[in-house]
Length: 507
Image (tube, rainbow, N blue to C red; front, side):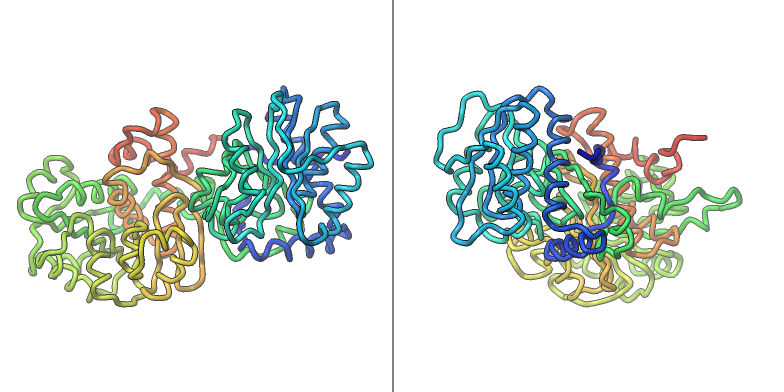
């Protein structure tokens, strides 16, 4: 056997991201380019899966392998043959279909039978000694709920005490968008091949994929010559956007940021956003807010410049600032509406969040100088649909938002998606469930606003901001756990990610 290595660390996953519908063509083109058959690629996939299985679960001696009626099932037959040759006990259950197996899967099945392997029916009882379940039921072509007997096998696997290892994608999860229209495998680990699919990174993916591994099946060099339409971004991407500052730089070089919000009783929102901007390197931050908030904001963070929000200060600040952030704590009363009406006349780069988005939903407009940062509920209002429709296809939702509102859209949530009017799209592979608490979005607005003021394009500022935000939260989670994480906790770690040179060992 050849020595096929897989990538162990999430940060070593490729940054290229492909639509699920492109994977079959990519696989065939890559095989043709290297003079390989698709069956040879299947053998490589099965070998890579078996090698990973032995490394992650070295003490597992009895495997239950669930094979579907497709090429994903073919990978399972290859794993079964390798496991049996290695002296492991294998129980293999396979689903039959109304059509013949694909040629490659049929070869793998025949090889398993020729080696003395046994195929059990889907309703066969499961042995008590199972120590690991290998999920090779459904692949990347699924776009509807799993049918019987697949649905029952998925449910049985999920309720079994043994860990589950998914090949390519957890069965029942939609590779195109990360939804689970029916039952879906909850894997402890997943090994995906050839290219990353969006459904592994966004939506319900975090609930099902487990630890994500990747193997290129030795197509690395050829894959690197292909232009992926989309991108996965993580903490390792930050060096692409953020470089060390020149020794002679001054505060004027680092952006003058105007932040508008904080009606009576919502000072916390604008304070979090404003401090996040300072902590992300903004040169100067000027806050326009309700007069009741001026004293508390200056006391809490004297580095801010704070004025009462009125027509005079708005005119002055909009002329002075390089970037405008509006929305945190803005409210939807006449005070907030008036401020937004003035701000929207500016042609400077701007970010709209929170109540600015709720007001935008009432009076939609399209502009190219703006970033909007909706969570799924706000996105639903902006598109006049229900929140469940946003979550049912996050990629489609973000593309619809860009088409309708222009500029750059950040659709927040598990696997935040950033998209631009120019067709750019990235998924932020950072963040955790501890971020599901008040104020996190305000902090993100401040970070993105600050990076925009530091001469990043709107799309790059949005990507870098999402990554720095999520990576700081991941570090907090690793130090203290997720439950009880506060938005302001991120300030203690944010400096590491807006200064990515600090993450690189000094030579």
